[in-house]
Structures are given as structure tokens and as C-alpha cells.
Length: 356
Ligand code: WQD
Image 1: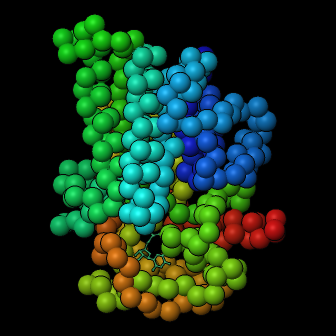
Image 2: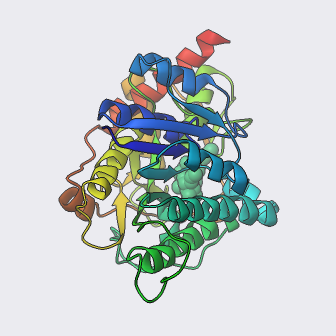
Image 3: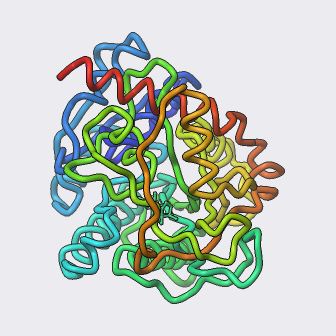
């Protein structure tokens, strides 16, 4: 029997790509989403890519504990990948209560259900934001976490800690810590720390669908190239980097999605060396904003209207991953070049334009 994976927030940008890769790897998938930050475009795209019209889909809110319990009663879930969360850094500064409530409550409900329904492993979508402005580059999983600079970032740190502590208590069901507790099976956990996910599926049937003005660089680039935005502002060209613009580790969305398959396999095949593990999901390759813009123009043969603007508050100067641990322990490696990824992002933007 194929193992079943629940993807919370599975209709969103990362969730939809992960669903495709899980299904390609032979897992059964249940997609659940409250559709608060997406429409059905990506889920329909997933159906087309996989050729499966009957992927179980549940419209529900993970802050609703009863709904989460019902879902776990309806399906025997072997692993859950938790994406259902708010993710806009600026909005989290303006609405901290909303962010803490949503991101913590939904995750606590997932862990509680995993524990009470027994033997379900939990994969949490964390972020390189937990490293803040690193003292040393590239960052390894052992690099210290820095105090979060936004409520959004703080929820990532807090959810990592919630998972670590829960696994510690429930991974060895029956030990003196949780003897007598309502726990029907051990849970194990993996946190994947994503660097900057960009791009789209090569089919151009799924991709990023930002609402309103995009906060992130690549959707802003593609929307400017297609004429939806007048001009890209490059935030800061006086950073202490080779060309003065910030450096990031841009990871292709399909590569990132595949990392989840390797992580789920490690959990479900009993290959974990610790009950709670953390992996960086990045390429190990720093790319500056200017380099990314130039690469976009070159690979897609388009001219981008851009200007230099003041630094954006809260941006770190440079961060990129040391992905050795994921390479060695998960057997996963980022494969696609920045150029391939930027071509896919552009194809997706054009696909969207064709639908309008
Ligand atoms: C990348 C670079 C900007 C927009 C954030 C979150 C992180 C994760 C991913 C996800 C920076 C520059 C951007 C623009 C620009 N969260 N930029 N002009 O800030 O590295 O990471 O998104 O849910 O947790 O913090 O990504 O794409 O916003 O910015 O010059 O219009 O592009 O200054 O150097 P960031 P980003």
C-alpha cells in the first residue's frame, strides 16, 4: 500500500509543486487548504500535470482543531507536510497577533492530531530567515539562529521549537515522560530551512500567484517584464558585496519540492538518525540582485526597466546555504541553473497573461 502524505496549504506555491513530486514518487496525497491566499489555479494545474483528476482535496482551516481531527480520522496519514501559514514579512510586523495566532495554532493542531492519531511524521516548512544576518557564510544547520526581526520569522523559529520539543516527548511513545498520555504512536520531525524559492514548474501550469504588489524579487521582475509594473526598484546598491546589491541563495521550486520527497522517504523508511532533524534546502551558490536581473534579461531576451532605490528595512546583506548535510543525508542536490529557473518563471508569467 502506498503511504499517504497530507499536504497542508497544498494549493499554494510550494505546496502544489510538492504535491506533483510526491505523486510522481508514488505517494498518495491529500491536499488541504483554506484558500485564503490562493485560488484553484495551481490545484487545477497539479491535476493536469499528474493526469489525476481525483486527488483528494479538503477545503479547511488548520486553526480549526475539530476539522483537523476529522481529517486525520477520515484518512490514515503517514506523514504531514505543513505549509498552511501566513508568509508576508511586512504584514506580520503590522498584524503580529494575526500571524502568531494563525501560524502557531494551525501547527499545534497538526502536531496534536499527528500524536493522537498515531505514528504520523511531521515535516515543517521553515526558512533561512531563522539565521538572520549570519556571522559566517555559508550557513550550516549548526550556525546559530539569530533573534527574529519579524513576527513571521519568529513563528518559523517557534514552530521549529514546538516540533523539536514535541518529538522529544512523543518520539518514544511509552517512555516515562509521556506514559499514560493520549498518544497513539511516536512522531518524528524534520524541519527544512528554505532559502529563496523561485521559478515555476517547467510545464508553466503551476507557479507563484502573488496577490497585489509582489514583495518578492522574482514575481516583481516577471510582472515588470510583462508590463504589469512600471519599474523594478533594486533595494540598495551600497551593500558590502561584490556589486553592492544583496546576495541570496535562489533555489528552484522544483528542486525544492524534490527535497521534500527525499525527506519524507527518509522519515517513512525509518532512515532518520535523530528523531528531529534539520536540513538547509539551498544551492550553496550566492547570487546578487543585479546578477539575477542580468541573468533574467539574458536568458529570456527581454529588457527590464529597473532603478536603484534605498535599502529595504530588515534586509540582510548576504546569505547562502551550505547544503552538504542535505546532499549527504537526504541524497538530494539542487540541479537546475538560475537561467533555467528564470526561464520557467517567465514562461509562467506569460501563461498567466494569456489567461487574462
Ligand atoms: C530578495 C532580494 C531584496 C524585491 C523573503 C523572506 C523569507 C522567505 C522568502 C517566504 C533582497 C531584493 C526584492 C524588490 C529588490 N519568505 N528586492 N526589489 O527578503 O530574501 O526573503 O522571502 O515566504 O523568509 O524574508 O526575499 O524576494 O523579498 O528579496 O531589490 O522589489 O531582492 O532587497 O535583497 P528575501 P525577496
